[in-house]
Image 1: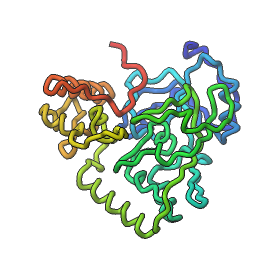
Image 2: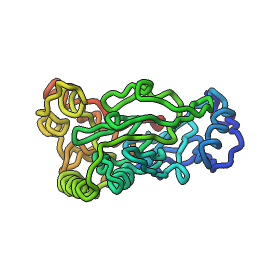
Image 3: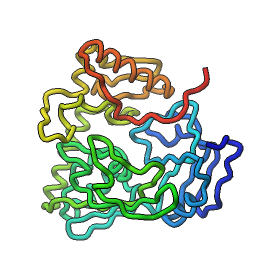
Length: 313
């Protein structure tokens, strides 16, 4: 990749910001600067930009930063962040077409208004682009279950449709094309009574608020449930082991490193209690993984994405 000073960016109609501090854009409020942040005006603007951008320059599509730790040294890349113009939600029969920047919760509510059951999205933090890319899910339902197709812009600047077969949905991951940006997705859900769907979502919210630290600065679940147990989407799943349980058993509920803490309310939530660095947060996560392995032989896998460079020592 070209050195920072050598990057020459294409002209664009959208907004380009140099040395954008990514801590301002992540839920955990940590992270150094990106070389550049690009907020495209529309899909064609994005396609033109990527087509003309030096192929050696790394591109990182970023949603609302809900499931992300950006390391303190920042990111040597052009971060693509979609905003207005990419958050529309339309319904037609049993399908919903949503822009990648549309929040999962908004999609669930708009779908329910139209009698389409996408209620599992209601309590998932983040946007539809991230939900597709990471096959987000809860309550036994996954984005893969309702996915029809998506429109992407490839790293080469080509606008095209992508199917479920091409994405290769797996537990909390997909085979999303490197450097591509998802701009919209079409989802199809079962039909239901709008009032019942909204009531179900209210119950989900109530349960979430009782059991999760929703008022703290977190990035949702920190670790995936152990392989072979619950939420893996496999037909032979059992549901008797959760990440929070093995963390508790290892004595790591409430564990701290600097201003980073594993929540007392839900031990699989990593929180910034105020002033934590990315190194604090990631380091605490690694402390937890080590303790869990020593206690149970289970290797927890990160669900939060970690990107960028640490600060030089």
